[in-house]
Structures are given as C-alpha cells and as structure tokens.
Image (cartoon, rainbow, N blue to C red; front, side, top):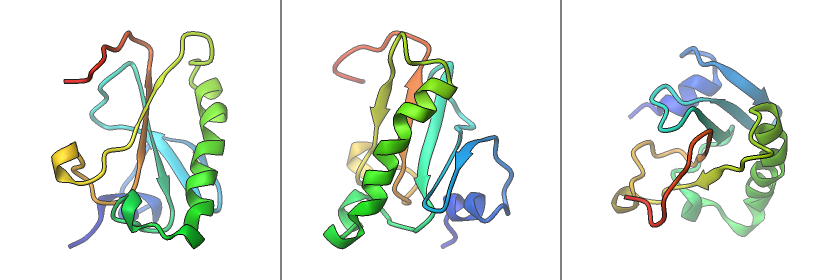
Length: 113
C-alpha cells in the first residue's frame, strides 16, 4: 500500500510546504481543523511513534526542535498552539506515517472530542 506522506515528501503529490530540511517536511493540512494546521513529517517512513527505535530518536528530537520555528512562521507564538500525534487507529491515526499536527488560530477545549 502506497503511503500518501511518502508521496508528498517525494514531490509526487503537491503540497503547500512551510519548511523542509534533510530530516523533515512540514506542510499545510488539506483538511484543516483550525485556521493554522501544519503537518510535521519525518522524511524516513515510520508507521507511528512506536515504530521508531531509540537509535532513531534523532528524528523525534528534530521534529520537536522545528516546532518553535514553525509556530513563529505561522504567527502562533503569542496565542499558542496545540501539538498532536495520534498513535494507532483507536487513537485517531488515519495516515500510518508518523506525523505531528501543529494547530492554532482558535481556542481548543480539553479533553478533545
């Protein structure tokens, strides 16, 4: 089964990219759940966070390090944002390539739906 995020990373599917480097690609979600909804995706395919070994943790660290840059680029530094990564189907994961959702521009409630 072909991974949509792998296709986006390779440029086979167009995306509105906000940032990319040798480890991650960040682009706007095509079905945004907030005025700002950015996906942060490692270039290397991991089905979910549990599939990443301790030795591959530099990908997770790199994702986290990119968040302040992305929040600032998206104008979220003053009002804040929500960061989400769903792991497995019951948690709401629908694309099985590790990714984080950076969302902002509206108020959020807790717990989520």
